[in-house]
Image (cartoon, rainbow, N blue to C red; front, side):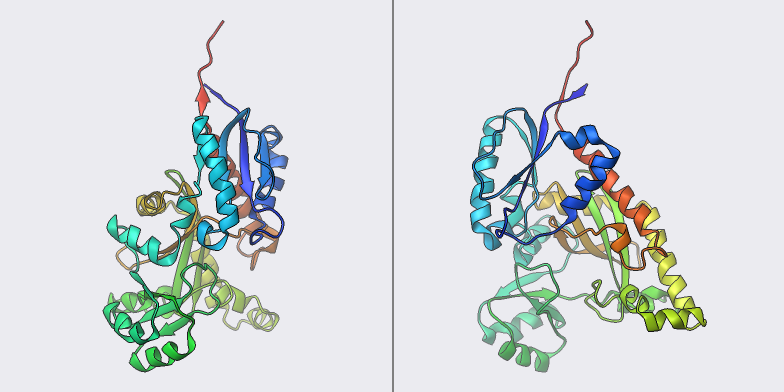
Length: 351
């Protein structure tokens, strides 16, 4: 069997979408490790003339999401390319239509319809309805934009008083998302008090490409909504904390979180099928998935992000301690292998 055709990657044209440098990092690594494959990749920017699809065997849409809602002009361009590709029987990765399924409430509805373990979410258009919706979702909720992946303007509501305050300050319409306290689940399950999972909240990330899963990182945080900015990694990387580590302060905590993160990256997840199911349910082929691991080893999915940020290993937090250069390179090489595996094949016959 032999691979057939070039790969067309569709990205945002200048000023037409948020710039995520993951693609540049990927191509830089690919030119170093597999220059022949790198030469077969064509990059097309939205806002340009329709691309020539002759000789193309695969089209990948690497665009911000939810695409139609945030970047309608780019969605229109992408749909025209997708229609032309389908007419020519060219394979597609992350179709433009699927890139709109990641709006928080739409994603939640799809996942619950297909029994993917995840948080429920509702759109609230009227502030007067916020208190009732929070009660219906279990009392503790996140209020945020329905179309953003970032943590800015995220409000946590734990009771009716906080819901009333949020109703006066939040921008509507808003997505109201059920919030699970996984740390409390570990404590209730009898996890050791010294365990990071019972001391802190956590969020794991893995990349899903087709039916394959690649672990990325495991963050812990004192805050219930976990991200890089409020993670222990970011806190412990500060110069003052670094000096404390050298003197033995918080050294056990530092070692524990590094050990857990490294072990996570090196372990094949037992719940890989659930992550694959979650991405496939959204109609996607490739995405980063954020989730939490429950005490019984099952998971609850928070979101799928097909337009993720993966920095160079040298730029990763605590790069040296976490072996980030090697880890990022392994991840990029895995992505390249999965991209090549997604290419259609042609039969070759002996003379």
